[in-house]
Amino acid sequence: MPVKIVIPTPMQRYTMNKEELEVGGATVDHALAHVAENYPDIKKHLFNDNGTVRSFVNVYVNDEDSRYLQGGQTAIKDGDTLTIVPSIAGGLDAVGMGGAPSFHLAQDPDQEQLSNDEVLRYSRHLIMPEVTMEGQKRLKAAKVLCVGTGGLGAPLTMYLAAAGVGTIGLVDFDTVDVTNLQRQIVHRESSIGKPKIDSAEQTLKEINPYVNIVKHEVMLTSDNALDILKDYDIIADGTDNFQTRYLVNDACVLLGKPNVYGSIFRFEGQATVFFAQDGPCYRCLYPEPPPPGMVPSCAEGGVLGVLPGIIGVIQAIETVKLILGEGQPLIGRLMLFNALKMSFRELKLRKNPECPICSAHPTLTHLIDYDEFCGIGRGDDAPVSLSDDEEITATQMKAKQDGGDKFTLLDVREPYEYAIGHIPGSKLMPLGTVKARLHELDTAQDIVVHCKSGKRSAEALGILQSAGFKKVKNLTGGILAWSDDVDPTVPKY
Ligand SMILES: [Zn+2]
Image 1 (cartoon, helix red, strand yellow):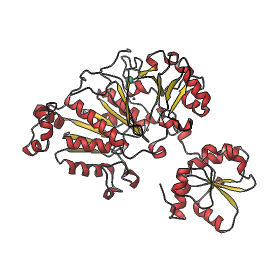
Image 2: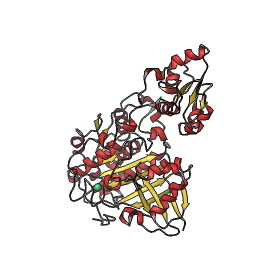
Image 3: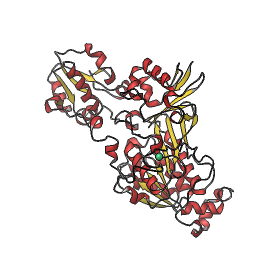
Image 4: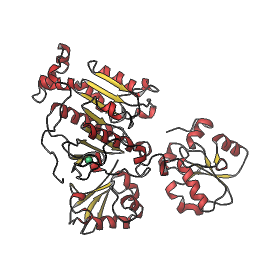
């Protein structure tokens, strides 16, 4: 019986870019096995070596997490929709849907006063029955920490500032780069090169001078996270890496604070509120991070510039709702947004009774080493180290060309990268196709392999060497180095 399987964007490269598949099967496991049969490349992303579904891949049957049905044995019927929800860089009791969360502000809102200028500024709030003077004082008393002032943090902090959230903390240690401006609208052309928190502070102060901005120009770590987070009522997570996701989650659970979550990739976004006292935490949704390299980051996979606007604004709305104590928060619900389809879907999240940090008997009672937990700094993510005679610099390669040396220049990037710019005379062979196209290359000839920065080409060099190619070198620093050192007309991206 055919069921529809919704493939998430990061995995569509293994299904020939198909986002929906129709397969047969009586259970979840059968259906997934059929997907793996039809698209063998996806298999290792869905299944462990022992054939069970990987723990960072959640499979929903319609809007229910299959782990809380019968797992892989869950029976499926004609017309059901299976949704694969991977992590993107969240008692079996139903969780607090509809009820007011057990959230309180640290500072008493009744102690706040609004000046006449502030009353005028917030007048469209004050006449709403859900806000009124009381709600506006709650906003003024609230302290919200935004981790990251990038794509999500930009709309999030701008709307929180405009709404009159009294204290906004910013955590970021990066500087503004021109590639940020396509989506990080809190930063401006004039801020390029400046610390992001200074640039964000300037914009936020221009939006609303009554807001107190607290800057934390640090990288959030296990050593400083509890100390920084403890002074805030709500944490909004706008980061782009799994280490910080787990760190923010665990610190929020340990401190009893809500974590307003958003994540983005290409055209898709996710948002929810993790608040362990009333619902699940990030670890309930994703017990384990994906192995490094399995899920591409926005820097590698790209992101539509407008997308963080939607997800960051959802985070801002959820933050304001929590502060006001109004409406139904996204606690226990995962919102999935697809910009290409212009569709929102909602999946139920449940608290894992065996969650290592938010269950009744946690095994994790303090912050850990998150780089180690996420496998960063070892294995796949570490740069491949090559010996000196396996590397060639851009200037050395130019000299080789000018000297009339015959060699094949192999570009292992993707066609859309080649279209941005390429080195004349290079042969395009995307990394994923190298193994299948070895016959196009001559073992007797010198080969120089290049990509954007040198990492993928080092991998390609390994593939060529294992196939018996001995005269292969890697262009150190890739086409970026070529642009810097030889030909600045080749655009950088
Ligand atoms: Zn949990």
